[in-house]
Length: 433
Ligand SMILES: Cc1cc2nc3c(=O)[nH]c(=O)nc-3n(C[C@H](O)[C@H](O)[C@H](O)COP(=O)(O)OP(=O)(O)OC[C@H]3O[C@@H](n4cnc5c(N)ncnc54)[C@H](O)[C@@H]3O)c2cc1C
Image (cartoon, rainbow, N blue to C red; front, side, top):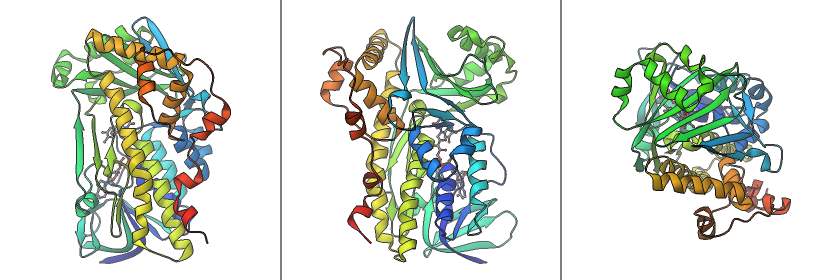
């Protein structure tokens, strides 16, 4: 059996669905092949950064996302007895906050919006097996026969184990870490209304408020200790959380079963190419990041935005040229690699428990809070709205070897490092209509 579509997307995760919605709105015949046939119970990314919120605004999906999410503008860092904070409100413009939304909820919103377009098709229970002679082979649960898909473009949005990346012969470079995380969502005290990262000696607990008075948590454990944690039982899990944040008494203790708690193994990798012929990869298929900076899902959304805009323009102009996919790689690959480095640095800061590293981390946080330029760079880079690289000078300030710059930046200085339309979609500046 065969199927024809203009764009075939393998994988109906956040990246595939964002791209699907964008292409549907551009009147392109798009089909998403998703292997699962029901929502997954696996925890994945839930934090939306400002750039992703801006992208969803353009897709007309932000209002419903906000109705179903929990927004906050501050993340407090408790380091022993000291407290520091990162504040999105120093960003100029409309997106001065981050938003937590349950992963499957967000997927549902994007899918429902996309299904309103008759040119959008979503085939669940469809496992893409590989490519043969430029066609995609799909095994469907409800069909005995294999489906052969012909398309102008095939987009691999199928996550870490990408068959499209394999077909493209794109190689990955991998970074591994010496720790893992336990992650779970449970009810939260009403007072927990901002992000919170608590670290004490070798311990680390991250808490991010969700709607419906829930909180998503991540607790760091050294690699290889998961079985020990399991053996010690759920009370030991409660005890660890309560020692770091006693206000969770009566909340985390409502977790009764280890089955609710998921082990998360952080890895980071990046592919050496994102496009080949009429194939392209996005999101976790192209790169994964350490979860510390809460960027994985955002990078998938941002890839989908740039790739979607490029494809939309090709179809609007009637110039379907696979060669032009290179623009997508040109914009997104360096940005993804910057983000991987940024997340990697944050991960390293929490990977070692000795006094020297803890001291450096504390000093660094204190300096970022005092130094207005460093603080802005940090927030801007995390937000995805722009990029301002950190210099050696910044590093020396962060290490306390140079004094902090305490003068506020002007609005013009701040805006200068925002990505413009031309930065996001540079082919538009080269190819005037
Ligand atoms: C277990 C786990 C936990 C995570 N936790 C966090 C976190 O706490 N914080 C954070 O910021 N990030 C986290 N991430 C990362 C974040 O969720 C991802 O970066 C983000 O979901 C990437 O979106 P994506 O659409 O590229 O890929 P995915 O979300 O992986 O979606 C890929 C989709 O493709 C489907 N698929 C796969 N293979 C095929 C195939 N052959 N045929 C058809 N369909 C296929 C899958 O079923 C899935 O629906 C986590 C990732 C994982 C895997």
